[in-house]
Image (cartoon, rainbow, N blue to C red; front, top):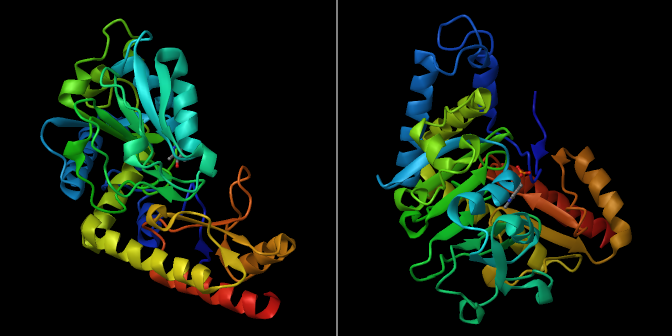
Length: 360
Ligand SMILES: *Cc1c(COP(=O)(O)O)cnc(C)c1O
């Protein structure tokens, strides 16, 4: 069986070998005669999986010892609201840099729990870039600065980690985690929903500096308190065990590919191929500033919007799935997460050139 190439923005494609292994282990995981989702999260076997997956992630991302790794429930959206509950007071301000729809949402959800301010935004450029660092109006007294380094819907990326002084930097890396090397020590907190580059939805990874965890108010309900989750090894209550298991398989897969640096190079090569196809074409165009183009989500429009439906239908027939852009933006979007092989991008580029030759 050959499977189609799935360009879905999220939930997104998983490496085929991970799916095959999960299938193989579904009836009998680890020799116990059950699947991993049918056993106690407190069993020795699961606790070992949890510990090993954390070690694997620490090695992949080179996470310093003074950071905790949490495997939480929910989605990034839940944590948009929960982050200020833990790291700010309602009377404090927090600075948000907004380069797309997710940064906007993060700010909106945070608002009841902190006075969220826009400290920099590219909204006036229709989110086709990153506002220059010199234009940001940061408040040194802010509780934290929040960025979204990869804007999944607008296809915009912040390729350098900004210097924000002594204020903790918090980043939603839902759609770029593990896609290229990242200096964790520059951040107070990194968090990501799993369904783009890691695995199943319903799991959120959080990498948080010990100092920041000390801010978590003891007045919070324990279930919302990140320090409590850290103190309990992310097992304050039943975690998303199957999601955690899939994540552990993906971490092993990344290590087997040669690690994050290797994937970063492959991702560069993949996106370069697609952006080059778009830039050379008279039919397709990408609106994003060259230095802010995403390596994960490539958005493009067709010069004649009347061709879009045909493009979508024919690409799907050719085994290229889920190229429709987000409803907020229209156009097309190809998401090229770690699990997308170069061959998938080559197939897409081949299809696009042929489509342009026939209809452009
Ligand atoms: C997909 C995505 C989210 C939303 O995640 P949910 O799990 O739906 O809450 C948030 N931020 C970014 C950058 C995303 O790509």
